Length: 454
Image (cartoon, rainbow, N blue to C red; front, side):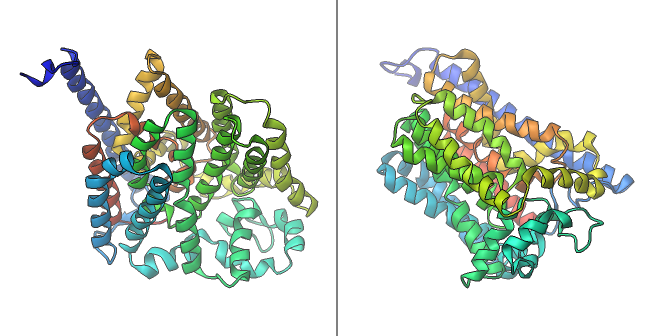
């Protein structure tokens, strides 16, 4: 008996599956060609005009083939997740699965970071690149510093802040100030914080997908959230930490709108959304993902007063201490165009940003997005459509950020919080192990062939 004639199997099922797989592969190939085009065109622009300010476009990186102490561990984690991840994702109890995803995600992120060695990969990376640790002494009197914060945003202002301190609301820097004050100062502890907290973002995504779609899709997405190529940047920038805060804000909102203690979960969601807005100006676009959660929820109105009550807490505290969000953002826009943001060509980055995103989410996600789009158009699978709404909201947020012109380059870290919400699209893929291998290969090639700026 041939496989396509097994009892209960539609005669046309295998041809349909082969056709869908071909289309998935075409989509993944197109995504890879986008990266190649961005690299070739970007290199030509950089040689001619020197206006991209990245050495290996479209990434902030330079060519440096190398191996390191994290190489064996990264290979071992990748092989283990490919071999056992799909089975364990189905069989483990839900809470055990969440713990396994967190542990495996940390192992993957740590091993990738350690390919560059402890000093270059973790301890020194956040000290020299993120710049938050360079200004800790300036926050001796926190209320006074917050009152004076906007006076140091512009490039030509006295004692101007470094780019990434000026480019974010002060909650980003204050996180590392408070870590320093409790005895966890320096780049090593900052790296530990970003990896440990950042790895929980995957759990928040899984909780949200389970609540708003179904548990089966969440379980199928779990191995892809572990082997995310974006882990290359999760442990080497503060954006991994930002991603986790934003993700848990969404997860608590999903709990609230599905009737799980809506008062407390709504309040927690609001508090975290408020904190998110004071960690990064661009993360206000998470309002689009929040809107998708409200649309998919069954109890949309009841938790809203508690969400709003929680949301205003952080803005009220910062405003009372003398930091005015809108004033700071207006000054930041001016500073952005005073610096390299005013030189980097919009005509290149408006599409090359998405080549960066391909390297963050991997080729499997490109194929998963194709399947998500098909599900949204056909609307014959309710759970896939609901997943598509959530994924589409994240994609729209990235498009808005892209068109704004305020995300030219370095989106491999800047868009990490949004990119995580594209990964659940992989739950719709067939041939899971092959796609997981593709994800791991992208991350391993990036980290072994390039020395990333983040």
